[in-house]
Length: 171
Image 1: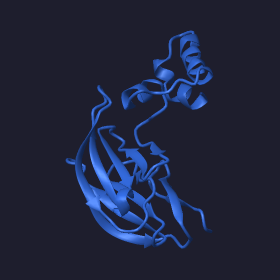
Image 2: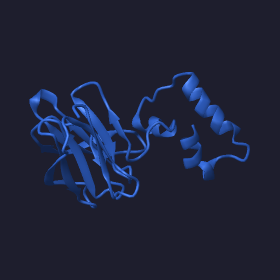
Image 3: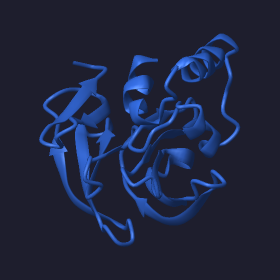
Image 4: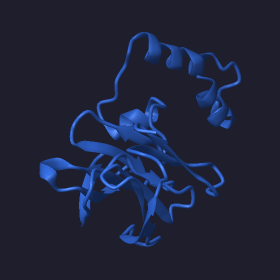
């Protein structure tokens, strides 16, 4: 609630009551979004936020512009990252391209500048690093870096983009 208020401080009405009422209603009534656009309106999803899932589509991340989404998937034993165009008006994702990989992928993390993406791979204890074409969003695999740990499952760039932090389940 505090994060949402801080992020939207300039847009809050003078009395702040309606903002807090909406936020508290969302929490108290356990409101869920029916689309990505709805999730943005409820303050549940922000550009650059990674979302994990319980199926083989392991995570989705939006770029900072909010125009593109990247999905890490291990469906059918075929690890891949799928690039989508995101329509913020309708909440629809339109698949554009797929980048095939090997290993066991986890949710991607997009750099704050939107020019790079990291994907944990617990199959070989590494992070796959991609560059992102700023015009098209196309991915180019640049390198695979050992994490120095076992079973990396999450990574995130710090706000400055200078550091990439990685969490492991095995070490």
